[in-house]
Image (cartoon, rainbow, N blue to C red):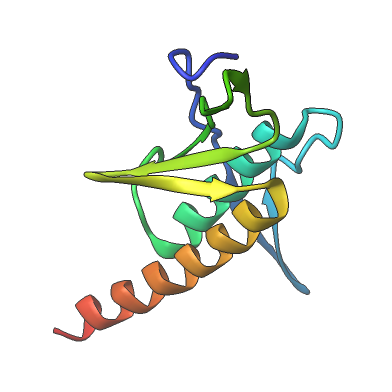
Length: 110
């Protein structure tokens, strides 16, 4: 899947007697980029954001003319930036979700 053909993962939180879980579960064979995109979709859901607000993309950067593999970028509304490696991107998405949840709660108090 290219960045041009970006598909927003559709996720939902299902409540049960012991808490909740996300459906569909992440397909562990889908690769790092799709794992980050799924994680971003869960973050949007938890923060009450519109699906597709946060996009995770392959970095198209080069070093000395060589394409950088395993690096990721984000786009969200009018902002974009570099996330770095899978692990760094995962942590950034966690922080993004926490910040978005706080903003959502503050807006609800107004």
